Image (cartoon, rainbow, N blue to C red; front, side):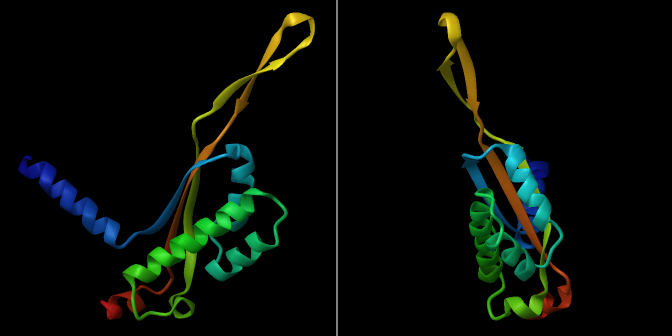
Length: 139
């Protein structure tokens, strides 16, 4: 491995130490339906986002609630001794990308067949803290 490659790898590792995220892969919901739910919680405080997801009727909100709890757990593992309530965590960014689509056939009239595409998605959720000085004092 060359010096430039090693330096960029070290920089990427340092950036990952300060990034609190969780990733949900191959979620069997269409990306469009998932984006409707992610639009509800982007930029919200973590506690408020959990409340919104808990009382939402969409099926995708259950999966996002688990993902948000996972991101909070990732934050806690990197910041031991700091309470979540004092850190003012919020959903910094949330992105939904299309995943693999299962292709199936459905019978149609006159001997034809329609193609069904059962879509899936990948969701990446990133948390951040409003007061960075709390995190810096805990290290």
